[in-house]
Length: 290
Image (cartoon, rainbow, N blue to C red; front, side):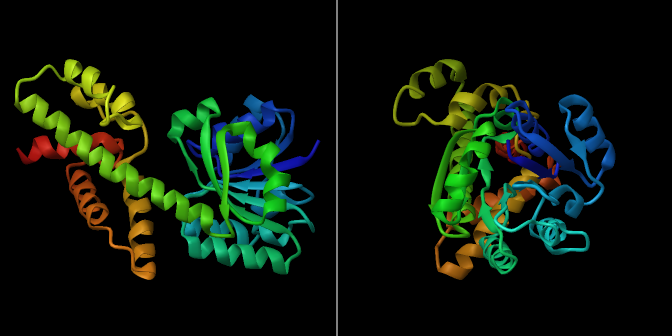
């Protein structure tokens, strides 16, 4: 059985690493806050390391799920970074939602050191991570993808190779662009229905069986209608992701007017004190504006 390391035990990484351990892999974890790593080992077995390099040493697959480009650069190329300890032909799988530029940079750095790299951002939120049903979008070579797939599938329901290095991150950007527009539309629909005096549950029951149906509608309408926004991906995180999308769009010439507008709306949610509310909190902004 291959040896695995997992770097970053946040709300996503902690359960993802757990699913890999449950599948029978020997897992060594690293987290900036050591207490979190110790708690993970107590729950799942395996071992923990005090640096990313120590975690990655002698491992066949090294996963990372951290906050942003800077965090990723720190745990890979920084002092005691994982890239200094990776053995030849090992695979580094990055589950962070980051830029395509950092994915390409790390892919080149890995090639220089004779090991492989996959950018593999995920979608599905905390619930998807906890239930092992994430969607994983991967950039990298086909043979490397094939080698890493059995381990990635431990925490995934859908895995797809999207193209060369950076393609996974670009696909995640498409995912976030689509979600931003959907949540804003759903927020406006529910807001309109409430103001019109309609029974929102009855409305959703009907329109969710037609062309308006979406995952967001099926899974978020009730909590939105109840004014509850503690059920998933935070507005702060969405703003980080939309910033990545908008920066990439400036590079490739894509026109994203709705995405830019929704990003502004999330900044207003943050000003309302809702940075940690989930993304459906766009409805709270509409009510506040009213």
